[in-house]
Image (tube, rainbow, N blue to C red):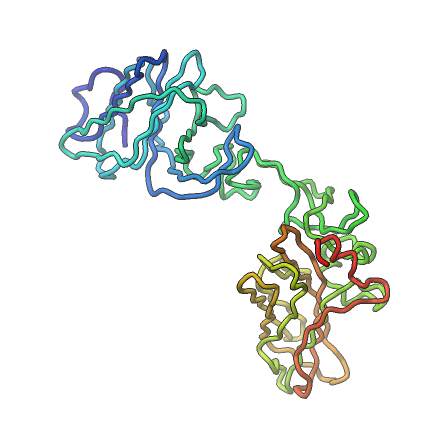
Length: 394
């Protein structure tokens, strides 16, 4: 959609069809009007533009790239939008009235018909309000130059940058595409270490995230993922925490021990093994697993060398903390008395808002005469009590 003219008249150079938007100030003292046009399909999210302190439900459209100059210093502005043949409907329009550079009034209209041989006229009466947002990537940018606008849960934003902070949604340096200039503590996928820096309790840790800035790899700030104190004692880095198999038995933290037997051909005797519920006191909202080479997710592809490979898939359905570990691949164990150890790290999110990280020790053993099992194991130095206390579990 292309704005052919702004003001009180339609230029004769305009084509034969489109939309006319008339802004009615309704007696409000206005010295500038800006029109925002949304195009394409609507999407929904929980958006937190400035100055909002918490996310709110939002329906949003990308702003028409040709729309940035659609403004007028006439309070009773008329905007002529010319049909360019690309759409039959303009999904959203929001008009903002300014007084002395301050946004003081707003009007919105959805689903404007784009005529191909005529001009449908829409009148948008401004209403004096303070509960709407106009903002730009720069926090000190002038309101009259705002790139984005929102009112009554409808937002017109920069395409590909829905929080309008200048960091594209797909940019790896975008901490949260829904939060304007986000600065947050590390999350599960940011973990690089373990830490007790701010507490006697152990947590997975990592660098903080600030929109548009590379992470500070020297930082080890706590996530919300509790870990046993013994894990912090034994492991400073996430690589160690993701593979406790080299640790001596007395040095191991509380962990999940899984036996997964294979047959003589190296195929797993059972396609899956059940993981007992870590807790029944609360439910689990999410579960993920990682190893030394692969970050948290639901699948691992672990190469043991010499043609041996184990694939793990974590299955979690519903809100209970019952999990299943699905196994595939080929692991040839030549001596039935020996294990092929595989280390991993399990992360659980609970319905009480807390979370826990538990190391996993998988024993790949030859012989289908033994059943595939998983059990949680306490050790001499770690009965697992501090981990449960941190996670708010009895």
